[in-house]
Length: 154
Image 1 (cartoon, helix red, strand yellow):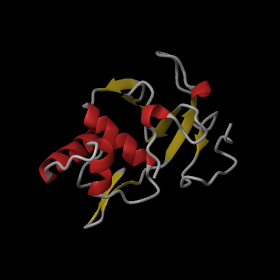
Image 2: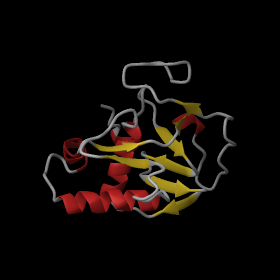
Image 3: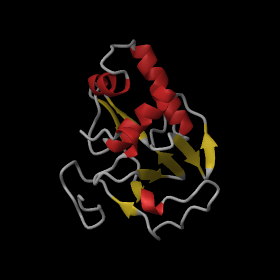
């Protein structure tokens, strides 16, 4: 399980997650679409972050209760509401499920292609984002596995 509070990534470096035309900046707690900030509630942000960081597996309700709600059990309608809000924030829907997919009786999974950008490559506010493929790194490996795209532990 990879839950990166405060945006600390695989090697302890802060990162931004890039998917579709969105940037999820866990350090600044911002979600942006094409550079424009998208307002999301804190629990929705935490839920989306958890799904992106655990995209290699199906996430159960219990996982979400433990990570997003600190172990408190909440009503299924509350969880469904937050999932729908996360989908809406990233231009997805329960019908399309392009990025957040429901797996019947198992949980949910973030299925979009994700790239990450280490803190050293993060543009300042208002700066143009780099063109795709220029300095982003792509990683979809489970915890403990590394590839040439992932930073080495320091």
